[in-house]
Length: 451
Ligand SMILES: Cc1ncc(COP(=O)(O)O)c(C=O)c1O
Image (cartoon, rainbow, N blue to C red; front, side, top):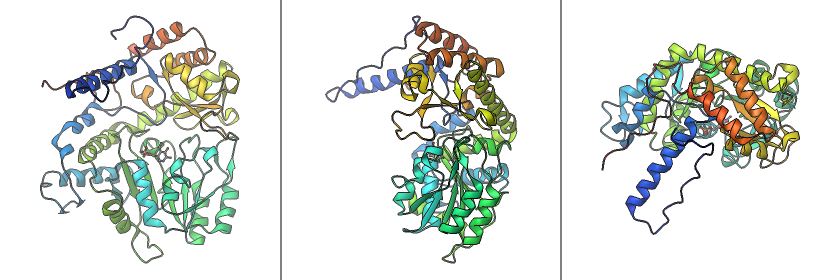
């Protein structure tokens, strides 16, 4: 770190629309360097973020980035994919091996694009779609103003158990039998505890509904066999992002097991293929597919240990906060079984205030709604995640120190003290683990081209 005082440098002024191109290039480079320095000296605790390994990241800057590969390997609309096609085939093979599945489509470019592809495969406008409540951790793509609404679906929410932010299975089964939805969706952005999937799958079968598990947050925990196994529990599909607890590139995936016939008589897997392309995508970002392939290969070796450590760190972090008097959510249930910890910070100024104050002190987190909240802008909670700090090798002792820093920051403690302690703590944790290790710093400055 270059700066020696305790403040992060303020972002630079943009060069403005009248600047010349070189000024803009210089601005982008410097601003990115500053971003790297800031993260190197911070404790990133965003539950949906992670660090891709250097071996996977190498794939980003290859010529694959410049190419198109519409269609499927061996049957493309463009030429020039001779060498790329086996890469996509092998990435799918690795996904199927890791998730013990029969089907994988590695082309969706994000979790949302995977969800949209699945919704357009499974349902038609006017159909009913069952999903968790927003205030119980659901993602916006399940709502009227998200992907579900875009498909013209009517979202009906499962009754939830507010103390654990999970689906109330008994009531959900009843609701499925009453409402007869087209899709029963399970998945959350605040995913503290696994849901009981089998009764939902059985009820869905009874009413002829398809089942879809959005594993965006917990894909890495599923891959590491530490959360739940939605395909073995009978879900038709898993859709997911590949960059949260699964430490891959920012991309998406759809995984399935046994093919099923949809109400229109078509095969589910074939329909997914055609909705991913040409339905939702044209280009599917080939460099990210290759990076996902590398991440899958690494996960086959490292993900089980990594997933175990993510969860034990989350529990330690929660305990540390609780021991310091912070209102950690779901205390009577052991706080969490995942990578996420939720804290009610009403008494310390609310989620917006605490997350902003913490950021200035080097602790990066997000404000989050708690059950009963009505404002997403000014909610009562903060959401903390352990994927990134675990990936850098932090364990129980460090989680306790992080808890102390969050406690001090949330009380509005002396900025310089908290900020300095965060920086010192981070100094020894800047190498990416649970992968084929590189000697490079995780936040090393980019190597710019000489021009
Ligand atoms: C449950 C859930 N589904 C889907 C998404 C969207 O994923 P992406 O950001 O990859 O589009 C998220 C993002 O956080 C999520 O939490």
